[in-house]
Amino acid sequence: MRPLLVLVPAVVLALSGCGGSDEPDDATGASTAPIAEREAALPPCSETWAVGEVLPDPYRGCDDDGDTVQPTFVDCEPGQAGDRYVEFDGGVAYAVEGGPVVNSGDAPAELCAEATP
Image (cartoon, rainbow, N blue to C red; front, top):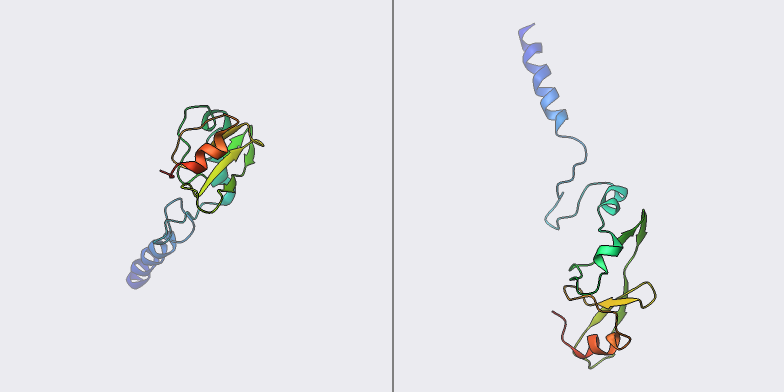
């Protein structure tokens, strides 16, 4: 009976390591959390896109009252200092990842004329 008592705790310990977690599962840092949980963690659009706030880098989108708003990346013209910028809500606001949010109508040209942070 004694060998069985030793074997049962070992099996329980081995099985307790199975299953997903919120910890990265590999060197890339990819989360094993379900997509719905990761999307729920997106910041509110009203805070993310407030003029003067710094857009996260990398930018993955924002939450608009439970709806995920995917990023809209716009490439700059070849030869410009900037690579791309992010447009919010059809052009209500703009920013480069890691840069301040602006709502100027000239923002796309200005963002592409500047080097990205």
